[in-house]
Length: 316
Image (tube, one colour):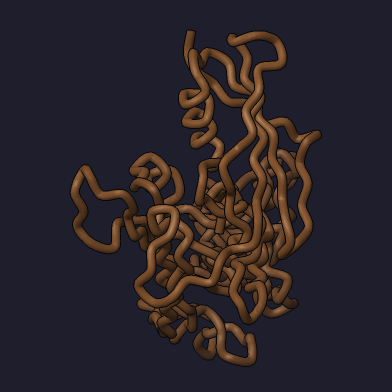
């Protein structure tokens, strides 16, 4: 029978900066030591920090067997972190205060609008190819803390993801509030080489912070929908009033019609016959995330390219 620990949420107690309590039921263990060790899967061990308050540290738990030796009840009590002198290790060093290292960053990305949110187009409304670039500010944080072991599965689970939940990082100066989608995990790695017998491992979490990680693209294209006579609605090449096809993408509104109302659509099977653009049929209109800053002269589409993850599991 596998050994498994289950959180008892009804036994949770928490007084910020004062105390906390967590209760767990462990099945499959044959002795007290096994029951206590099984709680590590839920981030509970002596000397470990409480997930919501890293200044509260777990003491030795109370263990009982309410229904015989097949079931263990483990009650963890958390008390305020003791002040450690530089270089001192207590509880194997796991409860040493984490280290914060901030790095300001400017990255270059393709731009589709100016600083005043006007579209970057030429005198006839065409976008530039290649597009211009702009500097995008962000902040990197190298967050190093001491852990009882390095968990490569945790690293693989969170690297390349952004936070799906609102969270805060606790510091003595106050909590750093992070809104959903603003925090990207680049890497989780040991800060230095270590041996298999090492009691504690310094682990560095590298995060990037931005207002948003969504990619913004100017809504442009070569084609639009049209109706002609009794024919069903169809998709055709955008053209000018003389029936000459456009040579570059033009800006489109949220319905897929050219923003330039002078443009037409070339009727399929003809050389010069044109029709007025129509809104895309509901069944052909994809569910797009439009930028709230879009206006009558330009529409931008937001694309979420980075998967989400619940960062509360990191216990920051």
